[in-house]
Length: 159
Image (tube, rainbow, N blue to C red):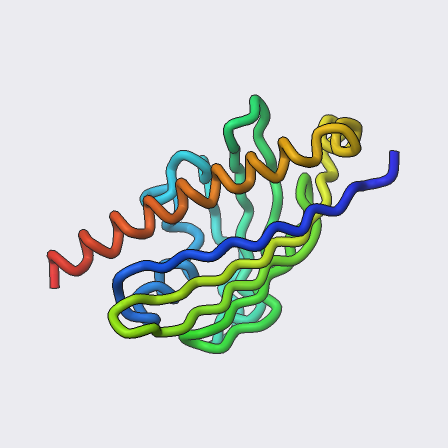
């Protein structure tokens, strides 16, 4: 069965500085701490260059649906503190792009995720369940927003 591409944009608005948000998003190995509903295991497999380009991770993730995903991410572009592009390979294949912009005391975070599911279950069911897979991604991103807000509040209390 031919893969079905999902294009799912996400927008967050969080209190904090663009540098703080970039540092949290740019360290996927810490997602298991502040985004634990989705990120079960993350291991860095390459540190990349001084800007983070080439930085790679192996990830084991889940959503609300009853399956997990094993995939790898690699940063292909990075401009601190406003832009990270990654490519995904494995059970998910495609591209993610994070864009950050300071907006007063808040940070606007835009994430564009364009992927296909390579896991046989996803590939087989995608033509019928594409809206459900998109809703699953939106749930995962909602959990990410909640975790990011918590993490930012915690780090601001420590400062």
